Image 1 (cartoon, rainbow, N blue to C red):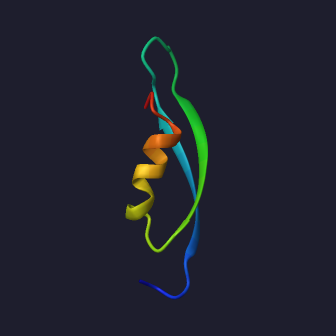
Image 2 (cartoon, one colour):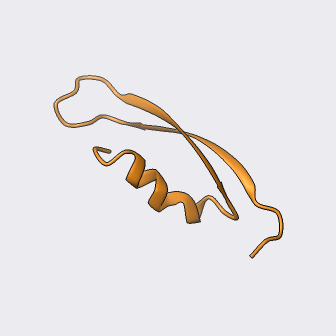
Length: 48
């Protein structure tokens, strides 16, 4: 584990069912790696 965690800002995008255009959302997370934040991103946007 890294002593210094990082702040990530991720722009997520998908075309949810029933939509005609892509939708975007911004996710902010703090962690040691982007990979460890994937469960939190999926929890934020369950329709994606």
